Length: 384
Image 1 (cartoon, rainbow, N blue to C red):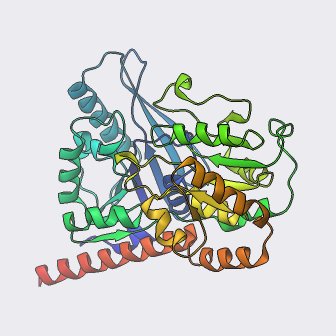
Image 2: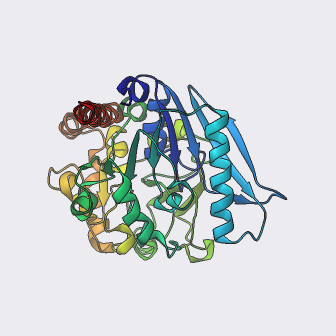
């Protein structure tokens, strides 16, 4: 019988991710940093092909979290890369004396080098429909089907993704994007203006997030043309699309990636937060983290009709929904005077009170407890 306390009270977790820890601070960082306060978490990233021979670089972070980066020889074939990662992973688990541990998956592709593991519990935190993203590996759907077979628990990054996945696993649970409210509430008090934003005139309509194929760049450009007196502030890295594809105008300002801790300082200088997402396969199931973050920052919000924004934010009147440029501009016109509207802020705070990362982590932890109790009881019954 496996001891429940080994997993939950002094947790060892190996998290296998398609995202890099230092890329953008988002769902994996929020959740796993909370687990790391109770035990050791090893965050396994995708390999970098830049080494003469396979090696694993370990980088310790706050609390009990270690980032693990495989470095493999350039030109390594896919099957060889899986073999090398398996050997590196086995070496890590042996050297760190992993006995009772949890395997926490963000990428199904990691099944190709980890299916031999025997964790006490396996979790698939399915934060996105990765198969719909540009550049998705061809074996992703097959690997996900295998992961669904092996996982004890499946969490989804939003309600619509849960509805798409729930029939594939008996123990699936929706956990939409949550919020570190106190962090973003700093933006409600005027912060020192970041140097690269100081000279940008008002009104400012801001976006913070990854700038990729999910963004409606045509809408962005059209809004800038319709209202040349407005200034669109874009924070975040440009990924999987060319800089040349982005709309360029004197009133569109691409300020690049920003540290998570600095986001409230930028948002405090905005008049509206926007979510100008395209409506395509890559956005069909997204649950943008920025929705509650903008609201916590005190910003009025306008978004395209992303399902997990419409439900519940649009239906509750917390976010204005607009898809074409004219409607988007009209919504912004209506919202511009409302940044400091007390009734709007009270309504947002009431909703956000039930939606923190601490609450989400606590609910996930409770589900882990229940699973471990059931597993322990089943082992006792089988032995008797």
